[in-house]
Each structure stands twice: as C-alpha cells, then as structure tokens.
Figure 1 (cartoon, rainbow, N blue to C red):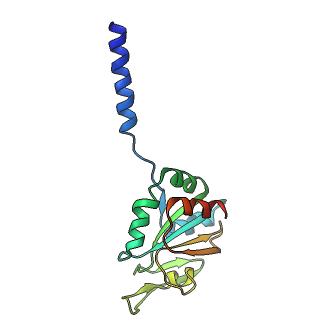
Figure 2: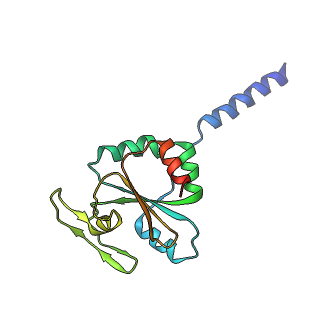
Figure 3: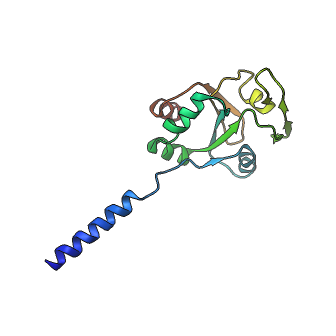
Length: 155
C-alpha cells in the first residue's frame, strides 16, 4: 500500500511538471541581429515578419500562427525568425546601406520595408532571405499555421 501511495505521488508530480512546462516559443531576433549572423558562417535562411503596430491581421498571426508548436519547431530548426516593424523610426544599416524612416500618407515607413517588400506595402508580409540576406520571395497576407508550414517546406 505504501508503494502505491508513493507511486501515485510521483505520478502526480510528473504530470504537474509536464503541465507547467513552458510552451515552445519562436526565437525572434531583430534585423540588426540578422545582419550580424549573416556576417558569420551562417547556413540558415531568414524569415522576416514585416508588420505594423496597427495591423489587425499581424496581431492574429502573432496569436494564432506564430504560437503553433509544430510551426515553431520547424522555424526554429530551419530559419532565423526576424520581427521587423515596417514603421520603425530608428535608422538601420543593412547590407552596407542606411535605411531611414520616411513620412508617408499613413504616418511613415522605414525605407528598408519599402525595399524588402519591393514597394508593395502590405501587412502582414513575410520576406524570405537566403543565408546572405539576399531576397528569395515576398509572401504577403495572413497565413494560418498549416499554410505557412507548407510554404516554409517548399523553400
């Protein structure tokens, strides 16, 4: 009987620990950190989530897409995930050029967003870059976890 009680307590402890485990999270980096990584012997591609603070679909992707455990695992293993606010006011040095904030009809945009999105300022957009930060493709619009995972595996 005593062994049964000890086993039950251990089982409850294991289950409790498992339930308290932190869910996996994307390892987001900044565009500046991406530049430093690309200067080294990098082998991973970059996924750049280009967003704005006012974008509703960007917030939905943050809550529903970028929290999917299978997607998180795949991105963390195969990509560097970069969060980039298209309306960032701080200048950015990227591939030897300085990109600055420019006023526009909606309030303003960083010229790096204009370059990454090839002038098509649509949010959310994901820009895929090779290990040297050269563009592969721009993928505009909201994506659910399954659609994004399929897209990632096609690159």
